[in-house]
Image 1 (cartoon, helix red, strand yellow):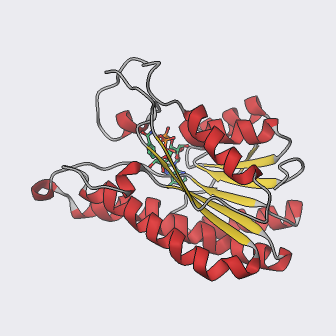
Image 2 (cartoon, rainbow, N blue to C red):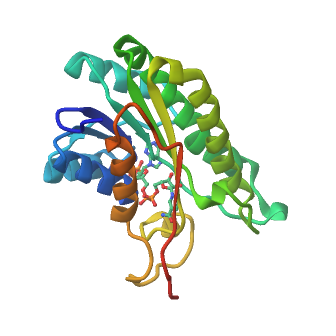
Length: 235
Ligand SMILES: NC(=O)c1ccc[n+]([C@@H]2O[C@H](COP(=O)([O-])OP(=O)(O)OC[C@H]3O[C@@H](n4cnc5c(N)ncnc54)[C@H](OP(=O)(O)O)[C@@H]3O)[C@@H](O)[C@H]2O)c1
């Protein structure tokens, strides 16, 4: 697709991978709408980077509906949804809190589903659209303490495959990106100690680059899935 003059929504666009992606898309000439829950941060980031801020908690159906109504009224079109909002909850099986388990599913799985569902009326009317789901290498292989997070990302991968089968006939490309560890606020939000910047590990811009490349490919084809690792990470 041609990113110039396209309209793209990035969930969780106020930080980390979402923000780097939104900036790169805007540099390519797209109008980029970023969403998140913390309104002050969202608006400050949008203003500073020439992005459009629309507050939306992806777990709240009414907020997702409001987001799409606003996009439809303001732009009358939508070229791509980047389903990026997400976080990690890590605990061994014996210590999993059911509320926390359900909450991470509400954001990483149900939220992504509602965002994709909400885009369909515009995509189908246009006969065209793109959905990029940001999963993880945790969605390819389980690991100790990963039950909740890894299960959400396996779920996202399976939903990606289902939507792809349903939507190809409408020229809607559904793609999955699996980053391995990326240096963002993700780890601290999940309760890990902050670590100093490591130049051998992935940065948000590396994932943004993969997302932009997948979108920019000619519409006659699409990359189903992309996995991104650091080449030679040192601890
Ligand atoms: N960093 C990694 O190592 C890594 C690796 C693989 C995959 N990923 C995936 O990449 C995605 C982005 O992660 P990141 O590392 O960039 O995290 P991050 O730096 O913590 O950013 C998360 C973003 O999501 C927003 N967000 C969280 N919950 C939300 C909700 N319910 N509704 C709307 N926005 C919400 C946050 O803003 P608010 O808090 O204001 O809502 C923030 O903008 C996630 O899906 C994550 O699972 C990350």
